[in-house]
Length: 164
Image (cartoon, rainbow, N blue to C red):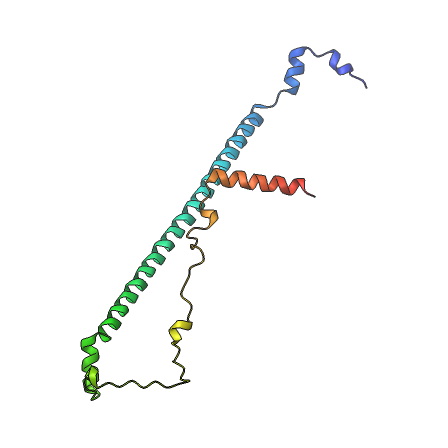
């Protein structure tokens, strides 16, 4: 290679030949600033999205708890109404309307019938409600902090790259 053109240049001319123009340096700084600004904006946007989803899930939980409370109050009201209907005073009134008369216990005669099978109640056959496990109120995605989510995502990406 012929480097004859270098012989006539001094050090200042050499540095000046390789120095960038000032407008290029300004464009590089502007680009770096805009890149940092975009990164900050995307992190803030992600944080805002996660916060919005969390608040929406919290509001849905509150609405469902209110609905459960209304159902429980309705069940309690219906149970009280059933107890009132089946009270001895109301049963006596209903029996009198159907022309039933009270019986003296001394006048009652019981007959024993051999081979008679007593009736089975349908309530005995129905299994009692047994909750197997507590319901999950929050999905695991809503219990992670932003830092935990980043580390979990990076770990899963590294595992995908390691395993071919």
